[in-house]
Length: 170
Image (cartoon, rainbow, N blue to C red; front, side, top):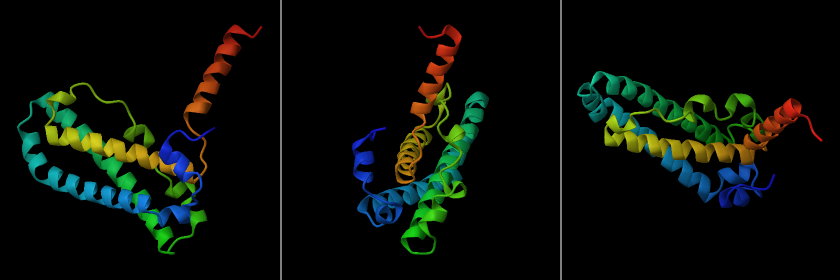
């Protein structure tokens, strides 16, 4: 399958070691770690205060979405730290490519947006959006760097196979 984005195409010549030495990795690492710190400060401070002022339904939504943003960022930070360990020679690239160190929790992190997000504080909504963008970018990096098949293609092929099975081919 051809690369999906300009970033994917630029990465197609990278191996994990070359990638971790790149400016792209340095920017992504810095952005990810900064977002982790910013989110922690918000959730432990102003966010906690804001959540107490929300009506019950919004407070429940806040709790769920704050867990989602935390999960996204912890998964992203973990992946970035593994890549930095490769960069610093503390881990070999083959180990980093193992399932244990791949980006996880996709069903939670990429899950659909809940109804009612407009009831949430704007700062949390901003953090949700930015963490989603970061997580999706790292998911693409993970796929490209470690030659994982793209998720869309098998899903489409499986759907066509089910349709063909149900209606037969002529």
